[in-house]
Image 1 (cartoon, rainbow, N blue to C red):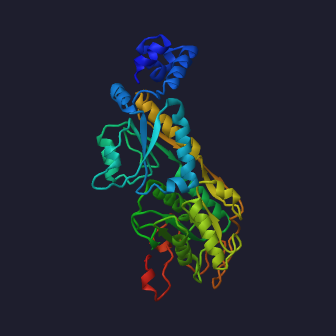
Image 2: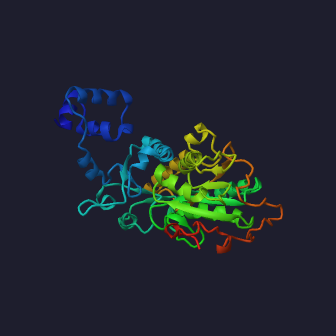
Image 3: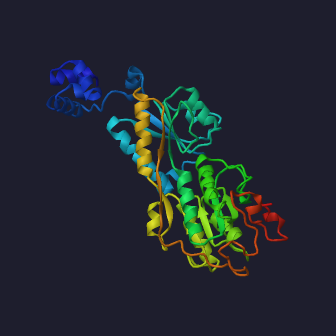
Length: 386
């Protein structure tokens, strides 16, 4: 079956049949429908995609580079909303979206081997060989949740501003003992020193900076932990390290809503109420944040807007219609039911207005003197803070 066969059936040229499939804007709707109907009767599904790509010099696909695992893209509601927004923005262009993992085998390296016309780099390690390969291929690129770089288009949210607002909210409620719970594949895990630890991930660093912007001047006592995966067992263990102690924090700031919800469940296992004994704040404002009980106080980022903006920027870059730019989308603190006034932890003296509660406090920034030793005395296996 060839284009000429269809052309003979309809009584038009071979080029007209080709345009019906590849350049529909060149034909009237009536003529194109006649050609497609004839093709369907003859069992012709269209030109070979590989041949069409070779003729055009394009693949008709763009990639999105994720982390070492693709599973979270299908299980995390924030990631699925983000990917869905990208797909919606790409739909009118006819471009396909290909998911790429940053990992590789000895024979297959997706960032090197998959044919594509451009790529989105989403929250990846900037030192990843996959990011380097995409850059060296000379493809149009847009970075999302990555360190902004001159000459590259990037789309980020105001992580630092949102995190600062969340921490300021807790300070306004009288919380002076605050825990931080972060996640990341690389670097230290368990109890950590949030100031001295070298964290990976641009969003992680920005959110940590925002928390410290508010907690430092307030003289807050900080306990911090980090989990390698956003899995309940990991978060449960970290929550116990943070809260199962006589001088437990009265609030927990979490890297994401997923972590925050797991923290609340783990706190309940410890017999703690939220927000009566401990307040919890998430980040993202995922659909679960509103459905969960208590409804989660969190920082909203518009992931749909982020996805559409990233896809639109990539389309413009592929068409040569735009210069590199760095987009920063706003965040917003959403106060719900998981935060309340600070409760006095057992075994501690009341927190006085001037901060003199028999504990070391300071202002003007958080340093090691403002970090609570995270290890109960005599438990060297849990050492993480000095």
